[in-house]
Image (cartoon, rainbow, N blue to C red; front, side):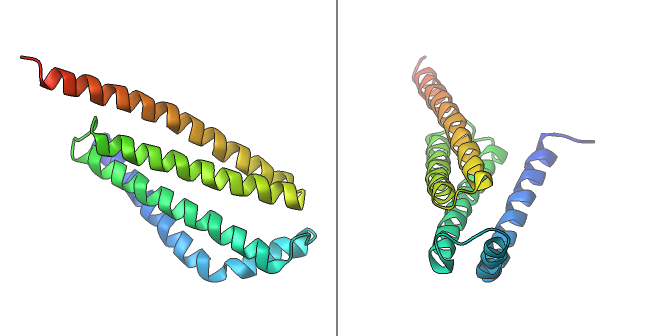
Length: 149
């Protein structure tokens, strides 16, 4: 039967799969960027495009690591903790970092898909920021209740 523990386990497995895919893709990223450049035109050149792609990949890897830490805390029943708000804060900043890179990349290359990905990533960062503020307030309420007799 499907339950919360299996859901967290599935999420952790997908995060690990994403990390494995990111590591594997990091070896072939210049070739993948080359395919993108063959399909579209090359206003930036191959090396600057690869640098931006590796920076985006790095931001996503950091995001996945902190998401995994957040899920570890949740699976240990440590939900309203300061470490979770820190994880959510860092995840949202990773989203904003990747969003800024994708916006710049999309504007420089005039590729609407990359620009759209930057918009979606920025919107996800905004949603996570609101969620982080909710968690922060819940942590303060929980701490206040812990000190109440």
